[in-house]
Length: 116
Length: 116
Image (tube, rainbow over all chains, first blue to last red; front, top):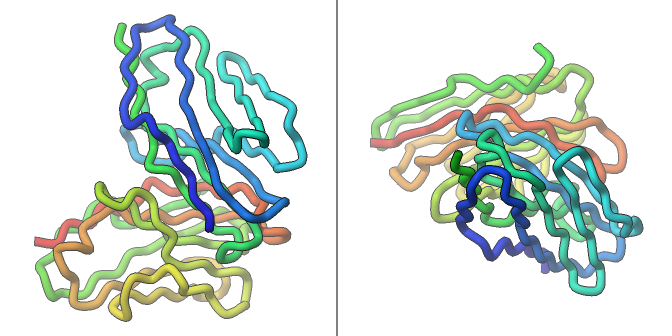
């Protein structure tokens, strides 16, 4: 069965703090893709990153970094030196070949509030 | 436009009425998805279209829900005899064709449906 778990429902930090959003996934496929999306108050889901199951290299993009560990089935997202504009709901998602046909399986999301 | 466009942005209807929600995908994207986002259930897959193939309706919650995609572009999600539990944000996404599991899905801003 496919499943994505984001155990942190809400996180509140003060600006400039670092924050890590956790994501744990379950799949029986050996080939799969993991995604992070950001949903600001405007409501539109914004794509942040895609990672395939064969690439365990961590990735850094500006203040964002992602840590993919197959051994623990985790794909965590860290924001360094958080800013108020980072306030949003963040979703981790899984897509594999055992599911429908590429539809995304989403976690429940983590609401991040960054206070000035 | 450059992104996925959904209309209306908000829809208020009375229980028992039918509603139609529209999605205009990114030009050139042959795959189109509908998702539902509600407080209790998070983001749920509803239906998937790929080119001229028969749609994958495995996520539709009941036979009151249907969707069509005309000319491989614009899609309409129809909910008949709306119920209060249908109140949610309905999100549309599109992606390039090909190996679907890896495709990045780009989302519209959604239609917020309120059933009174």
